[in-house]
Length: 419
Image (cartoon, rainbow, N blue to C red; front, side, top):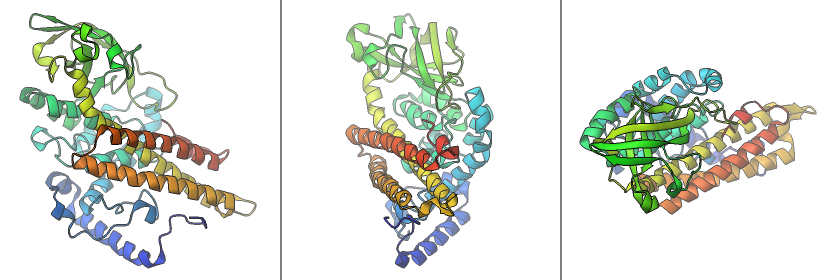
């Protein structure tokens, strides 16, 4: 690390072995076929038995290399290549336009559904791919690895934050009605918790669902709701027993076409400009009894049950964002010349790259461990919170240092930092 001219070069004794492993992984991926892999892969320990030993990300030529990290297999690599091609072809060229309008296009969601990027972890019987959480993590990572780390597509919130509530709490009727179109990208899902006067303090929310004959009357408002403007279905957090505070909260499935439900314009934000974020308003919205998701007055507990995956997803995305920013900075300092030599020849720059790489590599090991724990059903809320904390702080640190290495030329280093 300290010599720094190429901080990613692996030991010489590993180079030829690594190359052969990548070649084998690529061959398997090409022969498997993307959609065959998506629809046919079964997660079992035997799937990895014949896998060659894979280099870790910090031993590869780039943190972004496919074919690295022991938690993945050749089947994961094939899926990753499909995701990478999707974001490169269908997201990056149009992202500037989406930043201007404040949201992506409907066509993108439909194409993502066709490509199998939505509901990756959702059971096949409801229209998903039924794959393990590592496949979902690949979608998270590849969105961050794409040029500029595009923030517009709200796929992860749709598929991996909001959709699990339906999968785990929904009745068979609710799951059969909503999950298939959500997996196809024909409908967009949001979850509405935050209010103008209540963020993470769920006990302070004011949106209320009052019981009436045959259902509930919903009144209140929500803000900073991702996927809100384009949403077709919203999971709304509301009080059903205000006197019980946090213990009197319930979840409701609210159709965007319901009378009395309206949306504000996309919010103008400092960053994440292409990400669909808006306010939602509920004025005497009638909800039938079968709109309740889960158990009445148990909404707080339902939310707590799903938070570990949400926290892990945020931590994993921020880890990938940090890796993308590091690689962009490393590339720049090797290309940019000053006083007749690349910036990477300067010792102070090499030292900074070594520090950045070490921080990224250490947290990558922790995040990958968390992904494996979650895949095995063993990730607890405390460890998930650590992943979110360490990932977000790492992303902020690495993105800031990447911008500093670019000097007056900001370019993609700034794009990678659009939190």
